[in-house]
Image 1: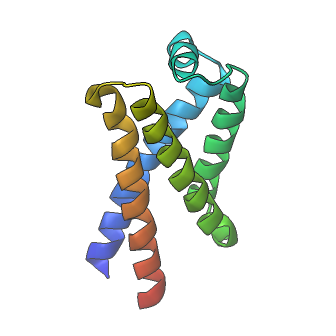
Image 2: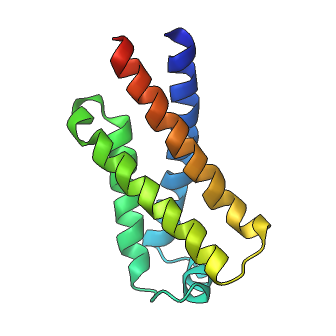
Image 3: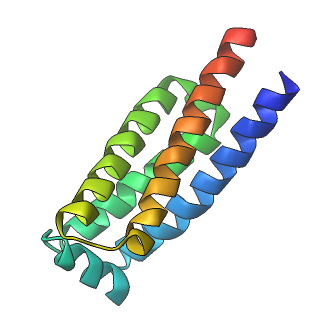
Length: 122
């Protein structure tokens, strides 16, 4: 159980850092995010929506009393990063650009499955 908890908290902490920082970049529509989203063919007005959604996911993952929403946060993050990977591939971005989304996707899966395992063992 201790090993699963460590895996869960390391993966979850990394997700929270990545998504939390990224959410503010989206909400404030920094130039790099504007360029990236336009390069992928999305309208810039999606950025604040993505940012708020990611910030809400971070809050749900952090607040213990929101257990009933945790699965929804994981599902949303799963599809967000699946879409990000697909979008980068569709426009021909190199692996260096796609790597961040792939890492985040894997961390979401590790966090989710370790969370599920902890629930089963408790």
